[in-house]
Length: 100
Figure (cartoon, one colour):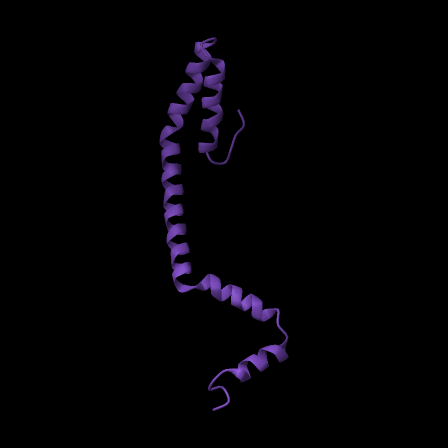
């Protein structure tokens, strides 16, 4: 079996082997099943960590959208593509800019 850095990636090949072997080799199926059951606590912990990170990521994404940071980034990118003269003309055209 191929070794992966995260044990949850190893469970699928074990299940696939069980399914492909059928009833032909019960001892092999038992070994694969025992390995999968042995890894279950570690896999559950790995899933809990992944769920936690997904929850944090989702919350961060919601806050980014609420603050409009994605729009700010796009605006900054658009400004960076403009020439200095174009940006200065735009700033001078703003209401109240020439009052100071």
